[in-house]
Image (cartoon, rainbow, N blue to C red; front, side, top):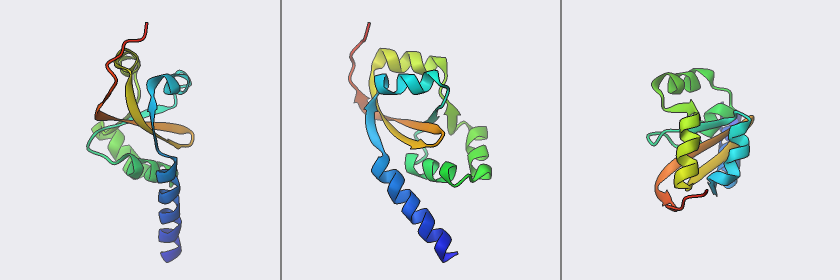
Length: 111
């Protein structure tokens, strides 16, 4: 159990270092590949990335069922394209997890 905790702590620290605030334009290619998962505001992006990386299917399935996480939709992509928000992002291969934070929209429109 101690070794498992140590491994989880190390993984969590690694994911934390890899988390970044990025523009939608940097995520568009990943959205086109169908690998962007949005994380709702009630969850920690780092918690979700850790659980997904550790393949904890029951936890992930529960979040999917409640809508706390979901595959990004075309409507999400349109909204992000229009608002150009900065999104918190981390990779939990093969998924790219994103989470919107209030106040990160640049308010610019890209045409």
